[in-house]
Image 1 (spheres, one colour):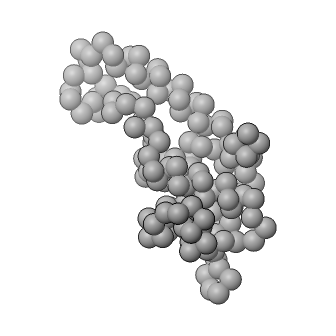
Image 2: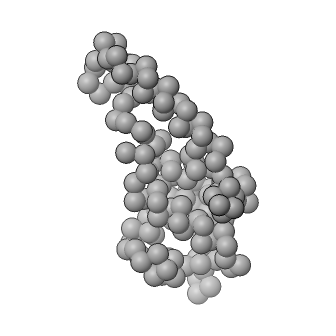
Image 3: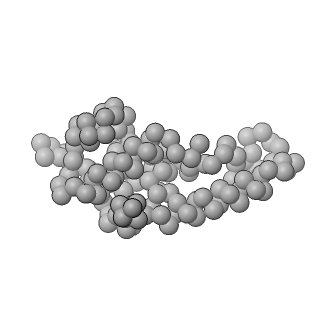
Length: 134
């Protein structure tokens, strides 16, 4: 599965934060997105650990973008939100790591591997700024 709820909520949060003039807290974001505060907090913390967001503590604390939206790619957002690279299919990027140990005889592996490479390349150049312009 390429885009889970974690990736979706990460992206929706980043869009709101990119448009905000000041840091926003988890309460505000979870209310605006109508999602679980605890789930969103984990996602935002992951984005902060990966340098996508800056977090501020205290009464006026919250989150804001750590870099311009033109420097934040969808690939890094999805990797941060998921804790791993997004996968089109449950197929390993290398034959040696195939979970079924059948990659050497699998006729789909070369195609799926090329497809994954194209998706990764696309997500690696698609920026938050481009999404904001849509």
